[in-house]
Length: 426
Ligand code: KE4
Picture 1 (spheres, rainbow, N blue to C red):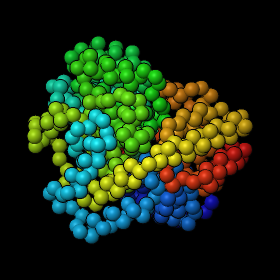
Picture 2 (picture 1 turned 90 degrees about the horizontal axis):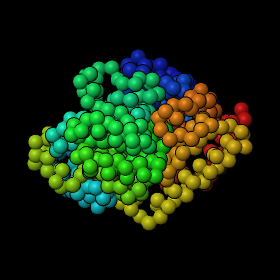
Picture 3 (picture 1 turned 45 degrees about the vertical axis):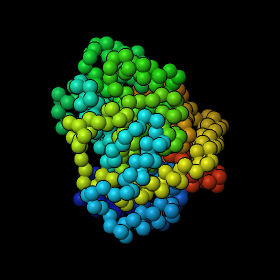
């Protein structure tokens, strides 16, 4: 496939921007080669700077559950932008957006909007520390929650692909306050809580892991975290930046029936614009400035354009049949891929939930970061390039999710399965 313009642009970019990218996950470090530069997106398709078309399974890493450039979302953003993009003062749109989020997410009685998932999780940790008066945090090996210092410890996805167990530049005292448990292992959490009784402010978890690749919670895992958090006086934080409005309209907490103390949102909630959010009970949110002593602020938080896109996105997602459609598309794709891999006799695990899945090049079940890391990254890289050469764009890392949108059609599924068949035989 001719990608001359991508190569030329990348050559310029690396001279100006670290690694030529504004986020390491885009650098193709773990698959090799030159990142594709995209010029246009429409529905489930994206075109690169050389005019090549791809069926897109990155979907901006999750936000585009309604596909690229949805006309109603673009229209809403354009209409509001023409009235002024930001006031640094309250607007009616923020109230409307807050109503939608509070109505959708069981754990959220009050919500604060920020500009990214990182800001949401960073603020949630500060809130948990402020509310409990405690300092320690428990996260999970392979859990990625954005680039907050306290959370860049055994992070997943981008960091895992970089091979950095913790990031340079994180204050050692800060990292030391963060303890790491194993996903799907309640006992590993209980041991930490018992060893540090009364010191743990929060347990933060992706209720459906997405940054070690997709790893669903095993029966009893989330329920176990809920019980432990309650009995040890720690807050349970669900990082639903990926799963929020994806696993279901109300997020993974409505799928598994486990209600956290604090929920973090991002990606989909912004409809393709920079929005994050954190919310909790009224009691907990009273702690947040200007009501309480925990400070958090942001120039463009809740700006009208992003709110307009978010509102339109949630209104479209609320419509009947949307999540059934996403579940059905995901199921057909996952079952089709399992069949393709089985017929090619290539050992693979395909973990899927509604709207997201990961193809692990691994003969054994993937249930945590340890088993995910045992996957064959080289095989994944070869498959990735064989697929992009055939006009399919999977995530450029073994530790990421493939995302399904309402725009992915039956033709897209057929084309993807054909490409996978050819890729495995090549
Ligand atoms: P952002 O700050 O990138 O908006 O959100 C951070 C974040 C928080 N929580 C979860 C569960 C996340 O998955 C993320 C961001 N995800 C990564 C990759 N899975 C986004 C891609 C990137 O880093 O460029």
